Each structure stands twice: as structure tokens, then as C-alpha cells.
Length: 99
Image (cartoon, rainbow, N blue to C red; front, side, top):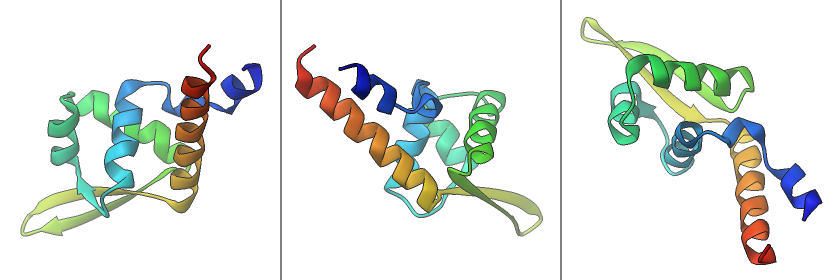
């Protein structure tokens, strides 16, 4: 059991980050406003979680212009997908252990 706990990634302990990675793992690119709506968080709250995941190279950010407005979109990186899958596997093992 102790080894399973150590397999959990602290980057995904927060429900916002867990939700963010879940959304990005099943979509190619998702824009900021859609993430904000799906996760029901404020701009600042979402931005801080995005920043934390970007620092770990778990997500990629793309900024571009659509007309005269900026459009910021996000996607999960290969490293992020692997880390997230490992985290989910550890959660599943923890649940199956019955402890």
C-alpha cells in the first residue's frame, strides 16, 4: 500500500488539475473559456493551475489571434499524458487494494 501512495503524482492532487488533465487527455486542443466553464472556476484560479502544469511540462499552450481577439488553447503533452496515466493507474491500484 505504501508504495502505491508514492506512485501518486502531487501535481494531480488538486481537483482542478485532475479535471483539467482529464479534459485535455480526451481532447486535442481546448480553449481557456471552455476549460473555465467546464471546471466552473475563475480566470485567476484556472490560470494558476495551468501555470503549475505548464512548469512541469504536462501541458502545452498555444496563443493566437482569432480576428482581433487573442485565443489561448491548451493540450496535454506526451509527458503529461504519461504522468497522468501513471497517476490514474496508481489510483486504480489503491482502490483495488481495498485498504
